[in-house]
Length: 323
Ligand SMILES: Nc1ncnc2c1ncn2[C@@H]1O[C@H](COP(=O)(O)OP(=O)(O)OP(=O)(O)O)[C@@H](O)[C@H]1O
Image 1 (cartoon, rainbow, N blue to C red):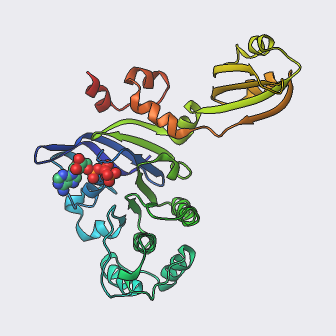
Image 2 (cartoon, rainbow, N blue to C red):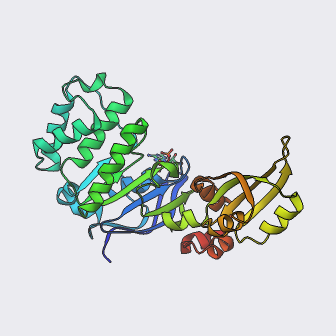
Image 3 (tube, rainbow, N blue to C red):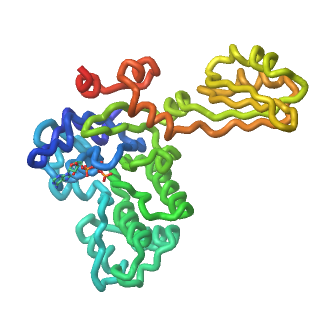
């Protein structure tokens, strides 16, 4: 497995503020890798180091096997970058600005720009300063994708985009992966990137606390379950369901209409729960989608021992942090 991006024990100090305290990342070529974390956790700083906008205090970073510091314009052209705080002002049109960016990024096919603008729904003839926040973000996305770079580094790419455009953006990310490009993207919420990311790193206070596949997060995530049961007593239902693996916080109460109302949370796949329910008279049932956001929040607060028990990889630096 080749790595498109690698950081080893990356630290960055701004004055007395330690923005990064030893970040280790290994991002396989051709994958979509998400980094999530609260405000100030170090996501943008990590990305800026990859672009050589910021230089690390210690540790190392490589993009496509090169140090960002030494890669120069050759490396920069192979990276598409969407900054977190996109400042686009001026009288020039979107098209003129993209032409300017293309003079830096290298050759861009005009049809590629037209296609991206059409898909995202952006009018390139308008002056940049007149664009709304979301439309500026679309322009930022186009300039990152337009030269089909080997690596895309996208800092909070979905910020300001409406849900429909978010989906189009996610399609672009999927297409990039299909064509072998590597995508590194950040968000402060998992829901924006869980649909496309293969792997997710959780950053907290300048450290990667966990790295996990989205699949694994789904497995440890809880689903809320509810059912309405007829022709049984609370005692019978409780006894029947009590031994279901992964079913937690089971409560069975008699509703005003006499039916039994069952609620709980379910970890892992719902197979055993559904099969056990089948033996009862089920008037109604709902099993929600796994709540990955809660799974992440749980990982934020869990001790490393608990995370290790869950099977999710905890990085050595995070383990050291708790010693
Ligand atoms: N140029 C700078 N000068 C001083 N401090 C900085 C600078 N850049 C970042 N920091 C500090 O480093 C820490 C990490 O910031 P960073 O922007 O990397 O976090 P982030 O996870 O991207 O946050 P957000 O989600 O708010 O964008 C913060 O405490 C921030 O204030």
